[in-house]
Image: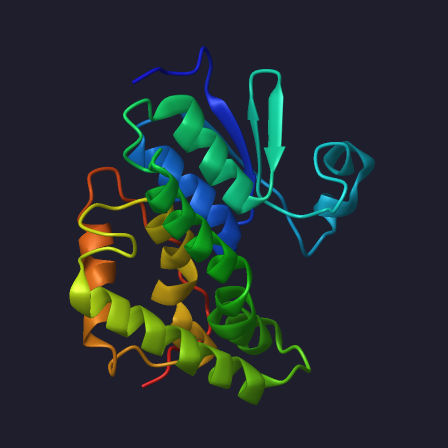
Length: 211
């Protein structure tokens, strides 16, 4: 596998599942990288220096030499195409690639507005519709549970960036008051990801987990 000429810079916030996706994939690929923490509470993501990297003022961002990539899913695609020449993490065949893209869309949709938003509401005490998040999560986890009853990973027998994109906020769903106990297949899938060489966990939030 090709390695970068110098460590990749990862601009992140430790409690961000989006940032953890990028960090996890960098580690799974065995790539050298440097963590640069952005303090969201202090508004460091809104400084001119950071907005030059991502005009939307969001983490994560990576800098790979002269290349800067914002958006967690875009980062996963870039790293897979740039450094995984075997096409293991992002299949090159049309059907496999489409299935991965479907889950990346889910990560930006149902996952973001379900367990991820439920966690934000609880962690940062945001006045948002928690019941809506629970309903979205119930539908999402039902689909994931059924999918993972048929296969070990979201797109088949081997992990892809689809699994990386869905892992962080699913694993931390209890921090949003969403229990994982009813979902045997999802819990087994989380354990399989956590057993992969290079796995790194996401920092736990101070919010008590649901029983």
